[in-house]
Length: 451
Image (cartoon, rainbow, N blue to C red; front, side, top):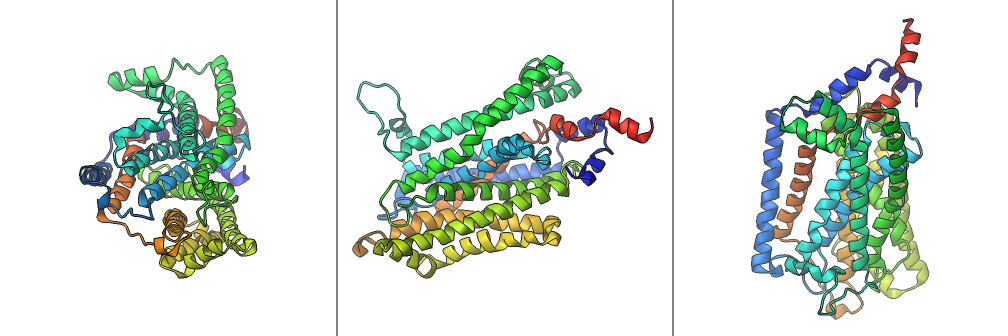
């Protein structure tokens, strides 16, 4: 930890950290309710579009033959990717003892839970008749309807449910000491009663802290492989096929890097308004945001390298179908989407190399927002360009989104932010315990001040 950051933290007492963090759980203001209503409106719009889709049929979407996977699967992969930053920041960086994660990992973990929950809706939307989803689940039945365990789609179900379960347990375990702190400050009533149940009888004894530390390390170790495995399995939905542009071994690391990139960008977009609205700039400092920006630059370079390797492999392999796809992407019907992807994911993050941009809230937010736009278009380019131009020219066809798909896409963002806004008013969005751990010990502070 830098000396400047340590000195800044030394200005605050443990009681002030409790006061500032738990103070965010108070009665929300008018701006908060306005945001809630806006997110409810977007969610309702998406819900109405989904009902219309179910009632009318998949024909009201842009999905066609040959593009059987369109915006729904694109958005599914996008939201799964958003969930990766939470596990990276909370688990991987915890095991590596990276100091700038302490004030931001709780917000990142919450984004993981809500992003994966949002992603889980899209396979149901894509199925059309979502009530038949039980055909994909491996449950005993008398009709011998068992899923094909050699199918990557079944691997998806297993990987995502495992990821969501471990992430949720890891998230909850980390919350227990902070829930107990909120319980002790809450006034008698239903809220205190609920917090008392959720805190699991936490008293903060040495024995409890010892077991808590061991459990937290264990869950961090369990969650770390999931950072790599989950989006690797999602990539195999594509890589295990023979479709040109998909059938490549680089997809697993490529998808993992892309997921981390989009997740980091989303967390930056969330943290900047949160720290301003709740006036916790002294806890979520520019030091933390700058650390995330530096990590985002590194991951962006990996993603840019993967883009280049894809074109090199297509050229080096000499496969005419692969070469046709990679000639079509930057010059064909979807060239605009391709160049949006390249500029937003490879060029724009390079602005973080300039300290003036990296330490500016407007610069941080704009770059992160453009990265999220680019990451959605990355998934669109991978899915749509390959399906629309497969092996036989007479089967080629283009794809364009309809208002139903745009409405459902907007509704997914409304649902995600609705869940997030609800969370930050019910449970602490900043870890009280870990912020205190990163501060100088009170005894050392007192000695330094001459008391």
